[in-house]
Image (cartoon, rainbow, N blue to C red; front, top):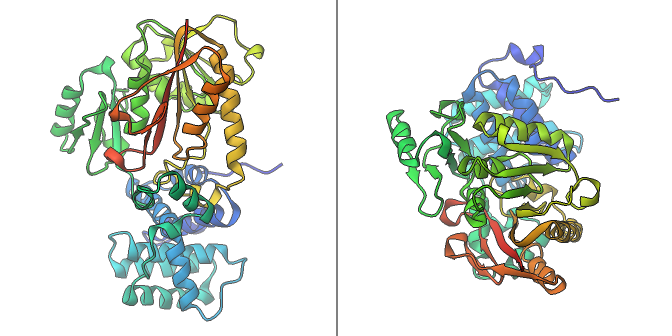
Length: 446
């Protein structure tokens, strides 16, 4: 059995010059993500706690995200500038070179310090013989710049073609927006006070903040800050959540005291938002992965809504194994999807998502829709949502559901939720500063 990874820095890293451990960790994280198909989120969850300084943690994240957004351009530069390609086993060295390019190309870092720390990181990775090559390649990048590539080139061919087919007029904007850093959106907990009061707290703390015009509880920070520096975060008055995800609560329009099912609830942010608005809800937060229930419970505990909800590990596609037969007034189905709307937050989607994944996801979404609709009370509403921008998972999925399901209708949503997509609405990445997201509000006719 594989041993669990440790969150303590190795002795070899602890004695290095400032900045070097961060570059070493970035190379190791990216080698796992690019070379071994690991999740960026999972790798960062292991690596970040090994850095004590919040500035180093922020830099590690920034380096990894910058590399994954510009990887195709950096790979093209390596191919052009190297006489011989690196050995396939040199995944950490290749990743470190990409980290070096990102510092010079995408991040506002002093070039001398970036070069020095990256060359020292090569030595720390056991690449003493290649340190000179690293220095030479980074100096060339500094001198010549990284060749520009169209944003489309960062996308796998199948995905780019599908986006162009689904959104021909917006495709170029989608490509560009998906490669930009995402802004920091905050959600105000109404049980702790008004959004206006929170804006005053942020201003008093010297944090620039803007209220959203379309999200009733949403605040956008033009300049992101560390969560630890947010007044009210620790006691649950604020949460980090994108505007698109926050609008789920608006779209649901849950009646006071309703019986609610969040069918795919982890990590719990949307359920917490509903309970912050109305603690009288009888809410069940369900997730098929028992390991993710801890995240839901932690979210509920921090926001102070835990006593108002149930948390359960169960398969929403198999109600017979857990459902008590009592219909739900409102159901949220935030379905598993391709995540093509949140590439700016999960850039490894560009690496890991395959065209062959889509049919299986569509089939799972259909099973979830059928099972959840069967648990809905007459006159009740079901909100189907995804963070995808592919019509096959969204508009076409809902069209097929309505065609096969007797007694199913839909309730229109307004322009605040994005482009008209027949029975639903589709926001594309970057529009109103938010993530790509799909919403369809379904009605079970009485």
